[in-house]
Image (cartoon, rainbow, N blue to C red):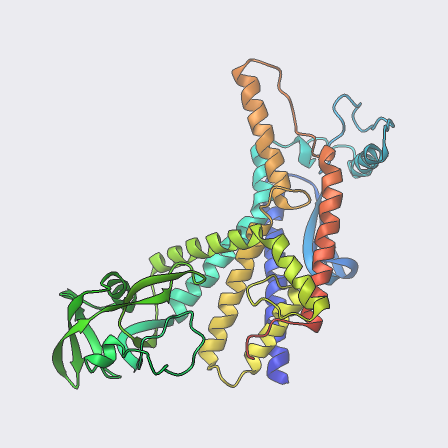
Length: 432
């Protein structure tokens, strides 16, 4: 129980620190460009603790589901309004809400703040302020994966045989024993043994199992010369590589017909270089972006798991409660070594920061990406005005997008509540 609690707290506070650093990314650029920032908060809801320093109140709130900084002038006055005033004209409920929000935003602007409001800053300054948060998460993700891959190391398959498969069975076949009609694997036919180190394949020196795996898959239907080191001596063999149904190396849900040998490799902890970090980040970014695109579909699965009793998708969305539970399970597991547990925590924090960073770049308010999109639109409009010698169009009125903002905020609250409920009553488990 102690280990479970420790693991849950490690990930919980790891997420809180990540949230705080996200807000620090915004805050640093806001201060750099002299935007008056009145609050720096981690969490939402009632304030647990706060302290004022200078013009900013720093604090922690009771619900650790995010964070925010409060900058004055996030919503601009309507163009044509007198400074500090909002026209009380409303043609509908949404317009009334927009004007009320403008009025509330203007109340924060005091004498001498005219050049310290967010909306009056240059478009590239607004872009940097809003990108600073997601950028911090992306940098943290790179840092965590650099620690994992270059510092701790990861289990990497070696060109050394751990097991030799008895028979040819398609990857999609749901069997645990060899069918009577199954043919022996090429590895079994030529007498490969556990402990054999493959030193060359088809005349090519083998140092990396991934390279060997690709060579085997490309040589289906050929008889290939191979050299293995066994008991200090080299043994040369001619292996008839057959073809078999295997899962694709790039898409684990796709089955392909490729060359097959029938061996399972040993593995060892290896540290890797910056190239591996870059490659891993590129692959994970593509996968995470794809997962965000499929988020609505995945949330249907979360709903069915929460209220219909279906099994949770281990690759589906997860909330702060679920992440903390996973941390507890990993810390309390007797099947993992201390190094494996540390590696898991580092990997999970890196993955979570990547997901948070990319999610906040979605170009919809109230996410950071909505303000980034507004800054980029302002840049485009100003560029066209210069090209066609038209008057400067000024700032983009993001207040007009408030109806979408309210809808998105409601959707995010509902999603967050659903994830908390599912994480409590039908959680994702990693240790059985």
